[in-house]
Image (tube, rainbow, N blue to C red; front, side, top):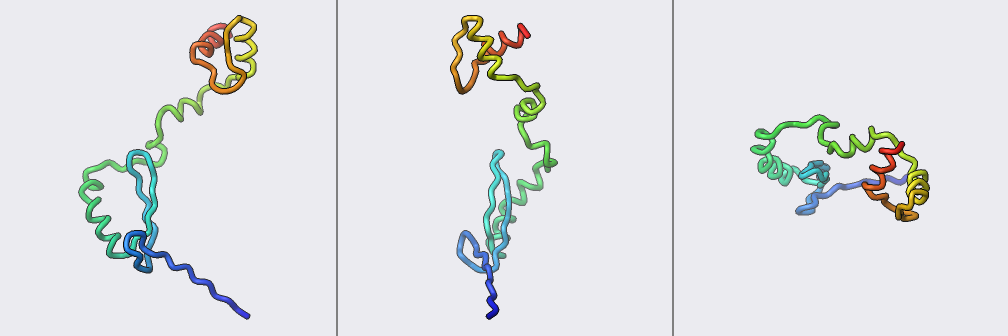
Length: 110
């Protein structure tokens, strides 16, 4: 016996059939919504003046500098930092974040 399965994407606003997924981003957060023809037209109409006045970003440019800096920073052995801190009488937790002050002292001596 043959079986045919159909997936119907419906509009997230009004439930109408034959919707398509639209992706957009605002303030660094990305969203997707399924919109039928009428709601997609309304969506695009509202956004058109903002799109025309805005600047299009390339894929890599929208990321914050902190993530780029973190990725390019040399890796530090956190266990070694903790051991060094204890040997030098500094209070450091067994787990979690190591304070910036201890990291600076460690980097200054190594």
